Amino acid sequence: MRLKDKVAIITGAGTGIGEAIAHKFAREGARVLLAGLPSDPVKDVASAIVAGGGEAEAFVGDLAEEAQARACVDAAIRRFGRINVLANNAGIFIANAPTEAYRIEDFERTIRNNIRTAFLMTKFALPHLQKTRGNILFTGSEAGINGSANFTPYGASKGFLHAFMKGVALEQARYGVRANCVCPGAIDTAWTRGPGGPLNLEIQKTIDGMVPLGRRGTPEEMANIFAFLASDEASYVTGLLFLADGGVTPAKGNLGEFVPEELRRAPEGTLPLRHSHEGLRGKEVYLAK
Ligand SMILES: NC(=O)c1ccc[n+]([C@@H]2O[C@H](COP(=O)([O-])OP(=O)(O)OC[C@H]3O[C@@H](n4cnc5c(N)ncnc54)[C@H](O)[C@@H]3O)[C@@H](O)[C@H]2O)c1
Image (cartoon, rainbow, N blue to C red; front, side, top):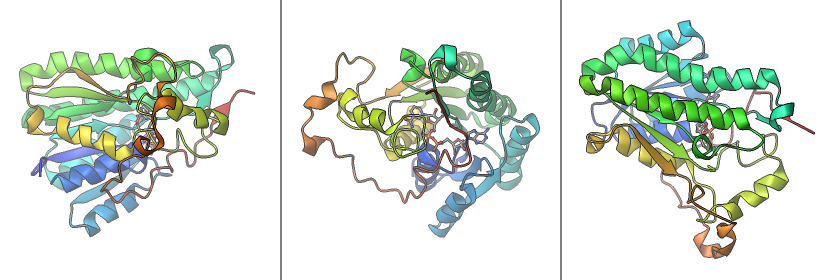
């Protein structure tokens, strides 16, 4: 019960990594406010947590809209009375095109959903986090460190979050508020597996070979890190970029191809996840010809 008595807002909590953070935090004793777009199954995730004996409430709205980001923070206060943790996890990955062919509307969607959401939520939650000496978590990316060919604005949006997090950590330390960022590599969600995503099926087949550990990460493996960083066990950790990319960042060459089959199996997992691959539902995805 690492997060006993904590209240957490988790954004993008209906699917993928966010669904796993929601279940993990609830299992660790947190009361959770789960935010997602109208097309996201946040109500279903909240019901599953309540059915399992936890406390959860869904908030449906577009967190890139000022009024809705404010309403999300207000909803957490109204329901739970305080906020100890904000997990800024919402984001999109909706285009695959070289920069000269990257559509301006996709650039703007990326900035809006990956950056504006996190800025607004951080801004509106901070006064409450200062009262509880709480902490903020971001979902950055290996791509925010290394850049990403064919989705350059996506990688750059994550680079923004990395620097934003560090600034917030420095600025808010005087209030006892910590800020940290988990930087996943390829995780097994709608973004890296299945039809209709920004990576075509041929590219999807090459992912595991590029990862030194020989496989994608699981949403639950990411949630485990969020739970630690959100907890008081991480009380001396702030301003950290926590890479969890299976070794991709320092790798040269396709080291994953040398990993034997039995070591490529992902851990079984313990969370009741049902929406790992539903994050792109209702979103237009653009792939250049
Ligand atoms: N899957 C990966 O390989 C990977 C790698 C690195 C980083 N990440 C990061 O992890 C986070 C989660 O990604 P995922 O793979 O679980 O994908 P996902 O699509 O399943 O989850 C993202 C969720 O955020 C929601 N969202 C987007 N914009 C929103 C808005 N304006 N308001 C409210 N909700 C919004 C989406 O609808 C979706 O449910 C993202 O920030 C992503 O950048 C993912």
